[in-house]
Image (cartoon, rainbow, N blue to C red; front, top):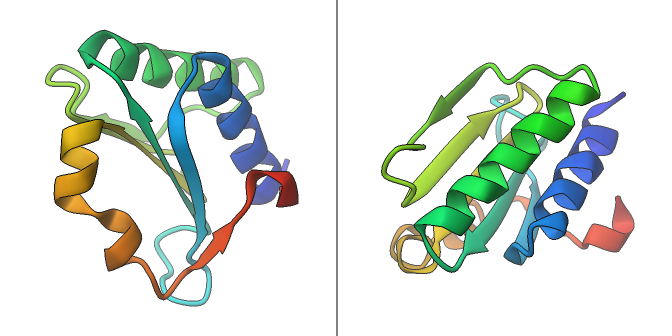
Length: 115
């Protein structure tokens, strides 16, 4: 599975748990740290953790172990590193505060249908 297929798997896992405002940013032309950033929001701490749990479970079943996870306990911003794809699951307030869409605006925004 390539990075695009992994990104699609992650988006599907997020959609399964009703993530809001899912964005995919192709950062291949602006950074070497990954191919894609995937951003999503949850309505509360429990949903943010459930989103991260479902991504981890779906990727694990597909043979993609996570390299690292940060922020799970606080559940304000959970970062999940799958090497080529970095997942950011936010509470709504923290997503507005950190505004990664603006910071990574040099990347190309990809519609979920394009995966």
